[in-house]
Length: 480
Ligand code: NAD
Image (cartoon, rainbow, N blue to C red):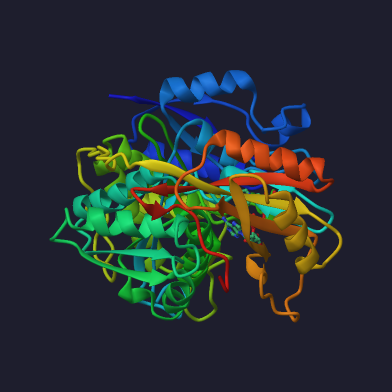
């Protein structure tokens, strides 16, 4: 039975590789009914700043599956990333990127690389909430939620279980970001207990990425928050041999989007030389998702055989190793000619014949008792004298419920007992807590803020200090 999908030919090399990919899928017997939408450069330049016309969302939502070639984001300000919009609008929380070496046919330092990277797709610094707060200080909010973390972590474990993978690794930086990356790590440990058959480990992101770049074969499935996942998945594609080789799936509860990981490659556009493999592999994930695993298996085995035959596009062609340098269409002709054959060097691929979409049921976490125990007031002050600011705030808070207990600058404690060597900007985080301990009311916080403003200081923003079941929901100042 034919499956309805939405397709977008994209920009640059997009139309070339999409045309070739669809020709291959048809030759292999894929059952697809396609609605085409025009996204990317044309939509941007006709005034749709998000790169998509409003009516095209309906088509995508109706068909539930979008197969998308890369698009070009025009230079200059005012254009929003279409990829980020698609992921967030459709709730595509999981980005799945398999990377596997094609040694010895495609040059790589890591012949045993075979990893699936699962990147959280909606949260983290990609919330796009940025503010310039003072002359000197710019801020980007990093938002990590417990349901968002639980969803992607459960997805990674379910994915590992369904695909026979043995290990799931979590990469975070909770030695520094104890709350945001901390909750991701905590939930990873909680969910891991439900999958005793799957081995788990975790790395601090810097050493994790370094280890991956040097010894990727020790990793199986890796789950990460958005930004780390973005970086690691590009490293992975690069060490595999070419950015032209990897595809990815963006999975949501209802809709999904499948694509190549690379961009529109304007430098080779129109020349007919682009490698269509990334889009083909994105498409194979889509065919499997649509329950057409038999077709996906046939194409993947024929594609592996073509790679073994030494028929290579320019990006992976190597004198002495490859046999024939071909363009996009000729490469696809060779795969079509190999349909029905199996690779000889590589293990033949078997793809589940039935689609088994990952179903996530969130367990959530018990509700905790939240108590307001103070406030951080962020003040803009050009005078770089922490002591005089501290004394001023002591005088202001003398009468109220809250008293100043600490000032930090870029997170480092500068009052009381600051170090004169600490470099200070015009941005001060001033922490107030109740004189006699215990809780405070929202009104106490507002009264304090009014008193500060009435005394001629500029308040940029405030952050309430809560405890949750008596555990601090805020970090200490460095040096506090
Ligand atoms: P790019 O991925 O388009 O190109 C990087 C390099 O890789 C270029 O040298 C290119 O020729 C080569 N390359 C990429 N795909 C190839 C393929 N299939 N075969 C052979 N060689 C290939 O990255 P870029 O140049 O930074 O970005 C170009 C445009 O693409 C920008 O407008 C960017 O915003 C956009 N982009 C879109 C997506 C997407 O739609 N998913 C992703 C990344 C970048």
